[in-house]
Length: 113
Length: 115
Image 1 (cartoon, chains in turn red, yellow):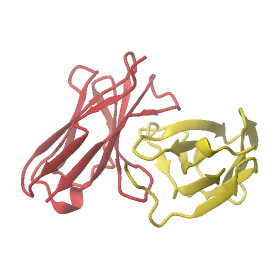
Image 2: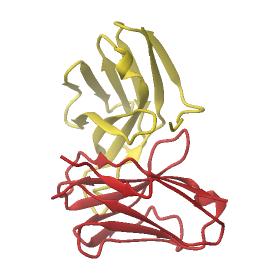
Image 3: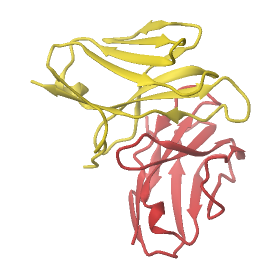
Image 4: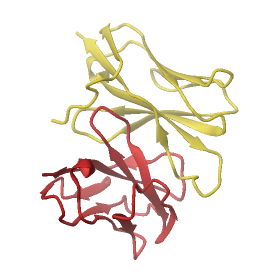
């Protein structure tokens, strides 16, 4: 079946612009996770949802970052007033309700110039 | 494709050898541990997991060992194949609470298998 999909796969934006990254989880998966992965490092937790409820947003770096999942399926990670330090691979994962195994998507490579 | 692991530990082995990848985890309260494989340009892929009430678990060609005393995790790959070449990450997870869904990843190791 279809895995986790993310769009766009690549995004180049100018400093100060807002960006929205989309994640489409595996059908039926009620838990959805956002991570950020810098080059040469493991994924770093940002936030996660069960259904439409945001359970933990402790990993969001600052208030420029927000995420939503209004209908409990697709999620959007929004970064406002982007900065060069926001450049990274943003990965989404999904799982059955808080199941231990998380399935990762291909990621969105964000470059802020 | 994406290049990860510019400054990661590396392990080079010959095809057919056994590989051992090590990981030191950080939180003594973690009760669940996972090994992920990440190939160039792809997202992490689950390999094997283990709970803190176990010290060994075997899968197909892979074995995970857990030493809670020294907070150490290892992944053993038997008869390593060129297709095993990737970056390997360990990850840990807490038992419960509001951060139940949060995986904390360790430093990866680049495995290169030579034919």
